Each structure stands twice: as structure tokens, then as C-alpha cells.
Amino acid sequence: MSPASNPIRSEPAFSPAQGQSDLFKLAHDLVEKVGVDGAASYCRGLGWGGVLAQVELLRGTH
Image (tube, rainbow, N blue to C red; front, side, top):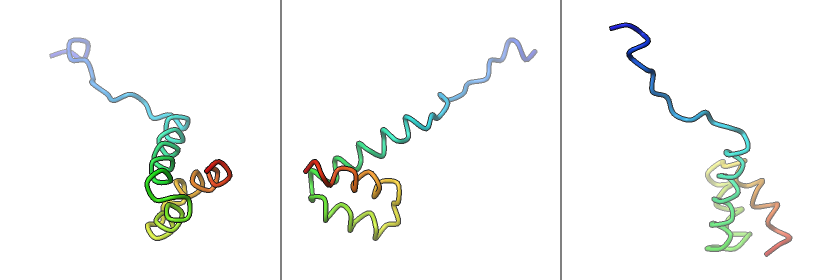
């Protein structure tokens, strides 16, 4: 089988913007469920620095 007849299947490339968007969505969901302080505490306990940063950005909006 030649390489041309066997296309390589790959997943879409990860983009930093998409990763930030996912972190923001997770942070927003946490804040909605347990509040900013609860979400911040949870993220600190799990070592989720990226999500914690997004939670802190939400602090002034909730």
C-alpha cells in the first residue's frame, strides 16, 4: 500500500486560544456552582493554576 492511498488520520491541532477558552468555561462553571472562593480553593487544592487564573479573572464579575 502506498502512502498516498493510506491517508493519515489526525486530530485537529490544539490551539492556545482553544485551551484558554476551555479553561475559562471550566472556571465559569465552577464559579456558578460553588462561588468564586469555593472555585479558587478547589483549584488550589488540585493544582489547577490555569483554571485558578481564570477564576481570579471572574472574581470581579460575580
